Length: 65
Image 1 (cartoon, one colour):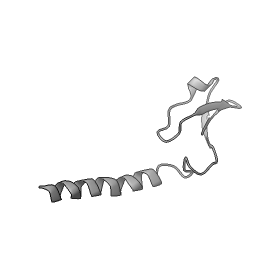
Image 2: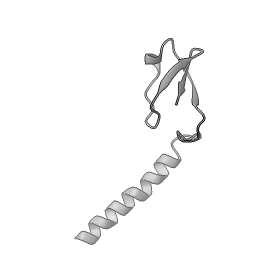
Image 3: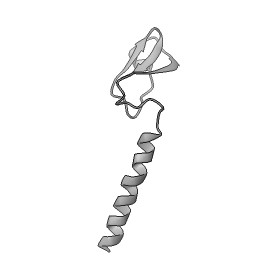
C-alpha cells in the first residue's frame, strides 16, 4: 500500500514539472515581464495568471511580473 502511494506522489511531481515548464514561453522566473494583448484601462481589468504575482496595465496592455 505504501509503495502505491509513493508511486502516485512521484507521478504527480513528475507531471507537474511539465505543466510548469510548458505553461508559457516566458517563465515567471526569467526576469522579463510577460506582455499580453489584453486591453485594459486599469490594473483590475487584467485577468489573473496562475504563475504571476502582479498584473499592471501599462500603455493599455496587461503586463505581468
